[in-house]
Amino acid sequence: MTLPYQVGFDEIRSAAERLQGVAHKTPVLTSKTVDAHVGACVYFKCENFQRSGSFKFRGAYNTLSQLPASNRKILTFSSGNHAQAVALAGAHLGIQPTIIMPRDAPSVKRAATAEYGAGIILYDRNEVSREALAEKLAAEQGLPVISPYDHPHIIAGQATAARELLQDCSDLEILLVPCGGGGLLSGAALAAQESGHHAIQVIGVEPEAANDAVRSFKSGTLHTVHNPDTIADGARTPSLGHLPFQIIRDLAYDIVTVSDKAILSAMQLLWERMKIVVEPTGALGMAALLSRAVKAEGKKVGVILSGGNVALDQMCGYFRGI
Image 1 (cartoon, rainbow, N blue to C red):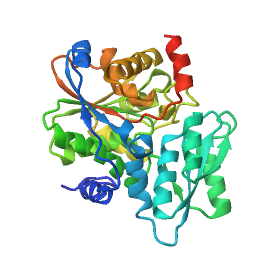
Image 2 (image 1 turned 90 degrees about the vertical axis):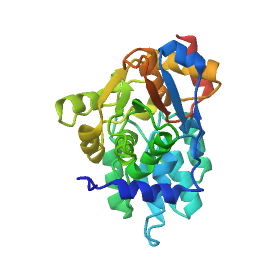
Image 3 (image 1 turned 60 degrees about the vertical axis):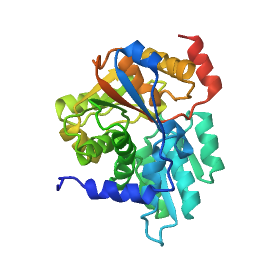
């Protein structure tokens, strides 16, 4: 089947082969307690156990491993998870990344990015956009820019997370996916088609304060949001990427929003009852179930827990405020 995008089924299968033995095949966990809370059978794809702590390693390695041998330096931008993933993938492949990160990025993500060996350039979200800064630096230094989500190789790599889940759980009726720039959601929508799960409802979940994807999906026109105030730092993107938006608009079933309070409640349940550390963005799908933003009673539901990179001292403060 030929798709009208820059990424298709062949690219996803090639990404899966490329990542074999490099990325972790993360576990799928279940919980009777969670099922009782939401009235559904829930299957969690635990990308919080992925290398570098999130699904982002899949796309980063898939992309960097295809760079020509002459490109040993690259530039990218990220609030944290893509930064860590690119830094770790670069260390494996002998590529030196420079990463533009906001000054208010979680300290745990900045520290890991530096420890993996990447160069970091900090910026103020209120003074300049990371895209504009990346464009300026790329022109000055002659470096290629790797988008965190608006790139066909990134999307193909991210798609492998949903592909694995659907191979393990072939009868899912709903798949809930965190949404920031749309790389994971667009990849999941493609993976559902590639796996033959045409009837599955692939639903994106984003924070209420960062509702650009919902507005874009409903209107059919790409919307932006400036520096949204949410604890889900991985979803504080200004807009969906152009390529992810094309795919999501055509193949996703819906996009919903959840409050920060719902995100914290979801995290607390996952931490306390399933004993797994999940970051705010990673808990978006669970928050949609708990808050009933998605009606899933009696259904089999897949939830991608996209990451687990979180500063514990910061989260303890958030939990005390619930």
